[in-house]
Length: 121
Image 1 (tube, rainbow, N blue to C red):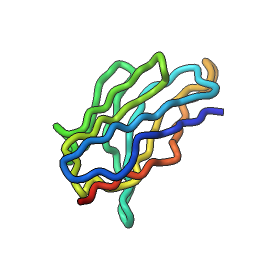
Image 2 (cartoon, helix red, strand yellow):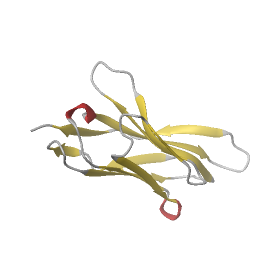
Image 3 (cartoon, rainbow, N blue to C red):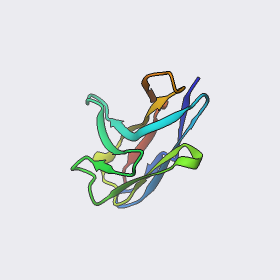
């Protein structure tokens, strides 16, 4: 089965940086889009950034210019470089990937377990 494992979360002061990583493992035929979502307490889960298999990126307006999403296809890994962090960035960050497990399978969405990012002084 496919599993997404996230790492890199933690506590950082405003203006600081963190780099999140998410590695996909298991039965994987092909990975299409990969992305990062976040969910703060009492809030809806929202898309932070996404990257297609062709390298096109999309960002939430609130993180444009501060966050950068990238992927390493050879490692089945997606990264989120977060700079100039603000308290409002505090949330649980979830990795997402659209994966086909075989040539005959449909595309499925997979989710990581979430990693906590806390921005506070």
